[in-house]
Length: 390
Image 1 (tube, rainbow, N blue to C red):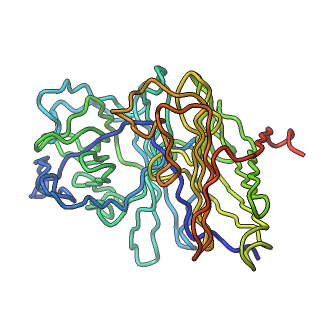
Image 2 (cartoon, rainbow, N blue to C red; image 1 turned 180 degrees about the horizontal axis):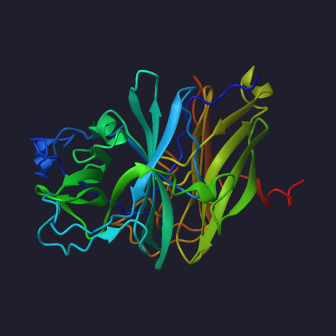
């Protein structure tokens, strides 16, 4: 049996997100002030810790309820649009909510487990949102995995039809939150989705989608597809020649290309290293990955239009492998990004902004010193799946 990887750290963020609001103190009210249930102190000087995850994907992830009932809920189109601005939305922003199903509205799916005792657990929230990227506006599939600092209130009531007091708040950064909240007006009950920066006690956003909380799956058309079109499903292999042998890293990826930059999300990664200490040198390590908390799992083969690094890091039970390659020094300015390229996986080698056409591969076996190879010999191959790979 192949050993599984304990940790895979990979990771980079190209996108800018944001969000937040609050719930009312009394049943049937909608106060909306952020300071009432914010899961972190924005004024604190303490180190911010966030164990919730936000993954930007180009394939549909799967979740498992381990044998108990699994249900999906979504936003359905409202019979009428709300007339009152929710109290948590900043008063200075234009409030023009979109009804679920309209162009540019956000698709939302809740994956929920319910056992025989009707205990409810939220596994994930999937959204498809239109996000500007490289001067192009395109939809992104985003996975929210709630951690210990997420706020989830009245979800059990919402599942059984009473969603006016529903509140789900998932922190993205220290001042950004994804917010889903139920609202009760005199003759209308609905939920809304919003992301935006927190300013004082309000959510600063001009993108709000409203809908009816009902069972449903807006992503059923993506079931069974390896990648979300127009992304291409490929196998990418890099072999690094080290002092002790060859380190082979193979990733099954969804690949997209826009404005000079390839972007990849790795669905599966395998590593073999005959030069590793025994018994690891005889084993292949495999991990299934769904992106990362900061963005895609890998950035590969960036062209000269952008100074984007090829960059990854893999942490195995016995070893730590990481790589950064910069093809051309960029114009982002050392003051803004002194590491010289953006994005870059956290913990991967750093490259000066004044250096171009270079790469660094480093690895460390447990209990040994780190080996750093500058411009190491390596080969890189990609092929299209399912028919173009031998």
